[in-house]
Length: 130
Image (cartoon, rainbow, N blue to C red; front, side, top):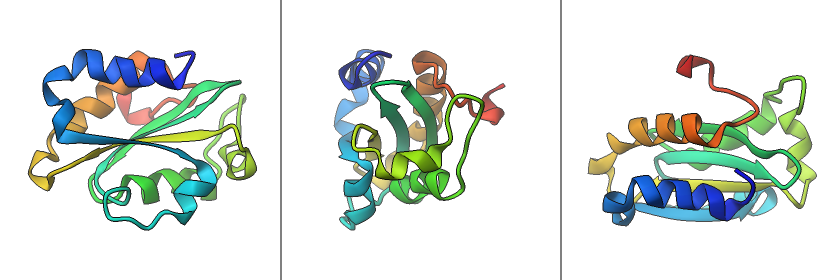
């Protein structure tokens, strides 16, 4: 995925019938650290993106997608191409959150995470996806 718009379009093209069940947030890493709103700190999937690397990591949280995503920076999730701790101060790095609006729709997170992992080709793969 070349751009953030490409990532959003992949979601909207496949999940068009569910778009109203999700709220999408596009945040800088620093904005994510500083955001304490309930809608940002909700269940959802997260996508790290950078103009140099494109999609870096996809994941989900059934409680707080922002908190879980930032744990990758804290824990320095990495591979031979990138160390995620480097993203903390990188102004070009973005965090996309696809958070559910209503907690009764939490079951959609499992399919959305798998779909985004398989279709955005992150450089750091989720080990549970095979």
